[in-house]
Structures are given as C-alpha cells and as structure tokens.
Length: 135
Image 1 (cartoon, rainbow, N blue to C red):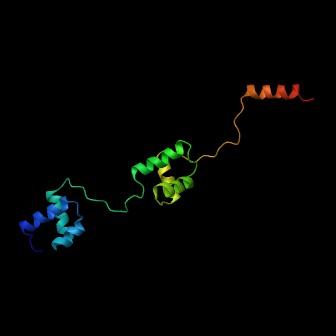
Image 2 (image 1 turned 90 degrees about the horizontal axis):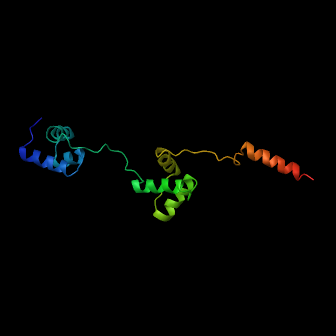
Image 3 (image 1 turned 90 degrees about the vertical axis):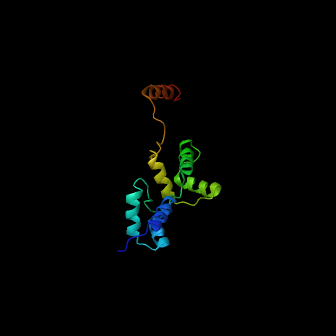
C-alpha cells in the first residue's frame, strides 16, 4: 500500500466533513474505501456516518398528522388516512406504513362493542317499565 500525501488526506477529511459518504470520497480522490474509513476513524472519531437504508416516506410532521387524524376521530382506518394523505398532501404510502406509525405511537386496533353496557340499575328500571306497560 502506498502512503497518502498530506494534501490528499486534508482533502479527504474536508470531503467527509461536508457529508459525503466514504464510497463517494474514495471515488473522488482515487483511494480505497478502507483508507478513507481509517482516516475518518483516526482524525474524525465523533463524525457520525449514515447507517444507510431507504429514507422514510413520512416525515415527523406527516406521522403526527396521521396520529392526530385517528385520535381526533376525523378518520377511522389506516386506509382512510392513506386516501387523505394522497388527496391532500400528495403522499403515496401503503396503508401498512400508516398502521406501523399508529402502532409505534401506542394505538391498537380494537373491535367496537355492539351496544353500550347497561348497569344493573338500568336493567331493573327497563324491566319494571316493560312490565308496567306490557298491556
């Protein structure tokens, strides 16, 4: 392995500080990606590099919008939220993504009860009413 000149090292470190990836810096300065990574570790230990992966479709504001729409009662289902996002904000996401956002915020899918629960007092009063007016 040939040593890198001091000038090239400075240029590599500047490129890394600008936010370029190690791969792009290596291609730009015609050195190996390993050398760029070693320089980064030695001279910029607190520099955080991207972990990679796909950037999220929904921003924090959009996630908050989805949660707020469901908790306020404006929208009932993830599909309705999906249609709302597509119509108003021109954001096309799968309803599974919206479900994941809602679950991460602590919301869970539940079945609605068919009718309200009656207390024993109401049951007795209804029975008395029915017996009184049965004829």
